[in-house]
Length: 618
Image (cartoon, rainbow, N blue to C red):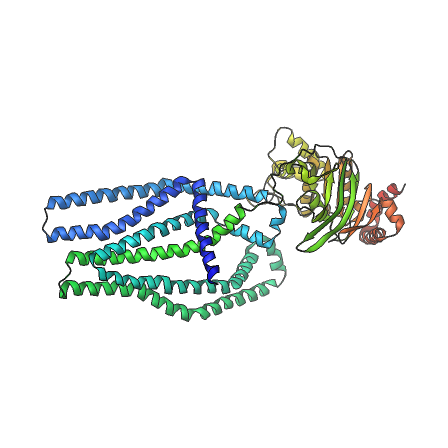
C-alpha cells in the first residue's frame, strides 16, 4: 500500500512536469508570465512583512531623517506601482491572448488525436471515459495545473525564507509554525480524504439527478414525458437520489465538523494568538524584544501562515490535477493500432476483387465473426442479409478497416488491405450507413460532407433527385442551402426520418467511388419508397461494385449474389432465384416477410415488389 502511494505521488509529479512541458510547447509566454507573477506575489508578501514594517518602525524609533524615510517610501511605491501595472498588463492582454492560444492549440491537438485513433477506442468504455475526462475543460485545467505547479515551487521557497526570517527575529517563534503544519498536513489532509470519500459515495446519486435533469430539458424526451406518466418515475428517482445525497452528507458531517475545528485552531488560532501572546510577553514584560521586532514577527506570522496554507492547497491541487493530466497524457501518448494517417501503398482506383479469407473477429472476448470466407468480384452487386446481430455491419467495419480481424486476412486485388495507405484505401468506398448523422449544416453540405466548389451543387441536385428527396428540399425556405436542424438556425429545417435517410443515400450517390456500400439504407422508408430507392441505387451503380446490407430481402433480390449470414458466418449463398429454389433459411425468411408485406398493402406490393420478383424470375 505504501509503495502504491509512492508510485502515485511520483506519477502525479511527473504528470505535472508533463503539463509544464505541454504548456511550454503551446504557449511559452504564458508559462513565463505565470512564474514571474507568482514570484512577484510572494515577494510582495515577504517584503511588506519582513522589510517594510521593520524599516518604518525602526526609522520612527531611531528618529531617522524624514527625507530618507520618504526616499524609501518613494522607491517602495514606485516598485509596487510597477508591479501593479505589470499585473494589469497581464490581466488586460497576456492572459486573454495566451489563454485563447492554449484553447486553440490544445483543442486542435485533441481533435487531431481523436480523429486519428481507431473506431474501437470510442466503443471501449474505459478509453472513452478517459477521453472525455481528458477533453472536458482541458485548456482551463492545463493552465490551472501550471499555475499550481509554480505555486508549489515558489510557495515552498517563500515558506522556507519566511520561516528563516522569523527565526532571525526570534528562534523560538519558529516553533509556532508547527501548528499550521499540523493543521494543513494532518487535519486538512484528513478533511480532503473525507471529501474524496463523500464525493465518491455521492457519485451514483449525482449521476441520477443529472440524468433526470437531462430528461426534463432535452427535446427528444419531451413527447414521451407529455404522452405518458413517466414524469412520476423521474420524480421518484430524483427524490431517491436527493435522499441519497442527504444520507451521504449526514454520514460524514460529524467527523468533518470535528476535523474542521481542529484544522482552524491549529492553522490560525494557535499560531496567531500564540505568537501575539509570546511577542507581547517578550516586549512588555520581559523587555527582550523591540516594538519593531514584534510588529515584524506578527506580520511575518500572518504571511507565513497564508503562504503555508497556499502551498498545501497547491500541493493538494497538484495531486488532483495529476489525475487529470494522467488522462490527458495517456490520450495524447496513445499509440494507435490503426492510425488514420497510416502510410502504405496506393491501392489505385480499380476493383478486381475483395476477399475475406478465414476471418474471425472478437469484441470483448465474444466472437462476432467466425471463420468467414467469401469473395466479391469487381463490377458486381452483392447483398449481405440476415437477422439483426448476424454480423452484417461488423463485416462492413472490417472491410472499411475500422477494425482489423482477430485472425484471418482481408484482400483487395490480391493484397492484404493492411499494405495500403489507409486514407487512400477508404477513398475507394462510398457508403450510406444505418447509424448516420445529420449535421447542423446546409442540405448541400450534408450531401457533399465537405466545402462546396464549382459544379458541386449540380452534382448534389442530381444525387438528391436519385434519392427521391429533391422535391422536398426544393420546397424548403432556402432550397438546397437550407440549414438542417434548428440547433443554430431558427429557420432551420427538421425533416422526417425517411427524408434524412434519403439525404444520407444522396451522399453515396454524389461520391465517385468504385465501391458503393448501402447499410440498411431504407429502414425508415415504406415498401414503395424502398423499392423506388433501390431502383435508383441499382441504376447509379451499374459500373460499380455494390454491396447491400439488409434484413428486408425484397430489397436485395436483384443482387448478382446474396450471402445469408447467421451468428457471424455464411449459412447460404447464391442468386435470389437459386436461394428461393433451395427452400432454405433465405427462402423461409423471404416468404415470411412477403406475407407481412401483403398483409400491409396487398395491392400496392403486388404491383411493385412482386412484379419485380417476377421480372427477375424471367
